[in-house]
Length: 155
Image 1 (cartoon, rainbow, N blue to C red):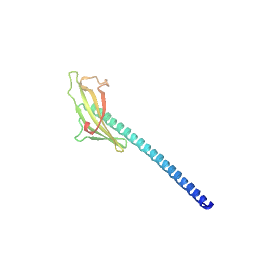
Image 2: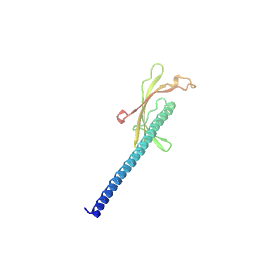
Image 3: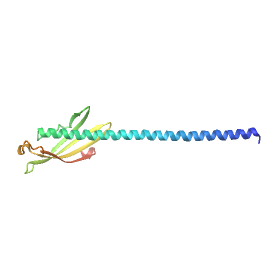
Image 4: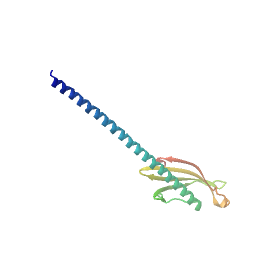
């Protein structure tokens, strides 16, 4: 084997080593950047979910105001859109229970918030006292008993 041929083979080995190391480093950089992009999208999705929950709760609060104004308030068929800043939530329906002997009833409020494709379907159970039978200074006429998030079939 001549000296030129030995140098040519060692140059080839060095070149192949550099190519393999470069390809490995490029693939690692690509994987890290894709991972960072995935984290950004996960964070954005979590933010949209939080906003949708806030919107659904805002609709429930709007329902409390409407129920304070009208003890027998019902939503329109198909729900009612309520503006919350630049966003909109939907007050899906309000279901009234039967008033008991102490003039209280339970009311189920179904609301929905949506932001960036994330939805929150919230069902809030309220207890109301008939305004005819409590003092006008009593601010406890409506109490939130429970709240739960449901899938679309829960509404």
